Image 1 (cartoon, rainbow, N blue to C red):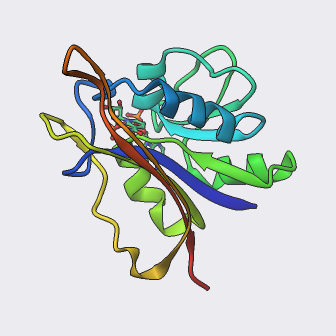
Image 2: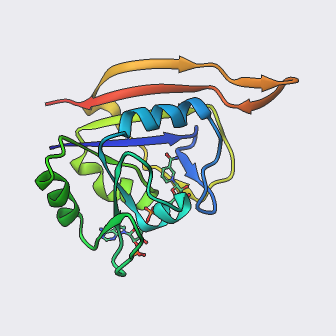
Length: 167
Ligand SMILES: NC(=O)c1ccc[n+]([C@@H]2O[C@H](COP(=O)([O-])OP(=O)(O)OC[C@H]3O[C@@H](n4cnc5c(N)ncnc54)[C@H](OP(=O)(O)O)[C@@H]3O)[C@@H](O)[C@H]2O)c1
C-alpha cells in the first residue's frame, strides 16, 4: 500500500489557524475531492473535528489517543493499526490529510506528496515542517492564477505539485 500525503501550505509553511484553514480556494477543494475519492483518508482528531463530519465517498480514519468516537469514522490510537486496517481492506493508496501533528509524525512513511503551494502569508498556529525536496522527484505541476474581485484577492494564486520519493 502506498502512503500519500496531501496538504496546502503558505509561503511560511503555514497550514491553519484556530483549527481552521487559512484560505478558501474552491479549485483546490475540488482537486482534493477528486484525488482522495474512493480512498481511505487518515487524519488527526483535531482535523476531523475541524471538518466536523466524515467526507463522502471516502473512508475516514481518525487518530486519537483518547478513545475518540464519531458516527461514520474508524478511530485508532496507533498509526500501525490504522495502516493495517486500510491495507487489510485492500487499499492501494492511503491519504494522510493532516493536520500539523499527523504530517510531522507520519512524514517518514510518505511515498508520494500532493502539495498545494499557496501564495499566502499570514497569522497561523499550525505549520508544516519544512520539506527538503532533494530526495523527491517532481512528477507533475500546474499553476493557478489568483481570483480577484474589484482588485481584491478573493482566492490566492497557487501551484499544485506532485512529488514522488526517490528510490
Ligand atoms: N492546509 C491543509 O492542507 C490542512 C490539512 C489538514 C489540517 N490543517 C490544519 O491543521 C490544524 C490541525 O493540526 P493539529 O496538529 O493541531 O492537529 P491534528 O494533527 O489534526 O490532530 C492532532 C491529534 O491527533 C491525535 N494524534 C496525533 N498523533 C497520534 C498518534 N501517533 N497516535 C494517536 N493519536 C494521535 C491526538 O488526538 P488526541 O488529543 O485525541 O489524543 C492529537 O491531539 C488545523 O488548523 C487544520 O485546519 C490544514
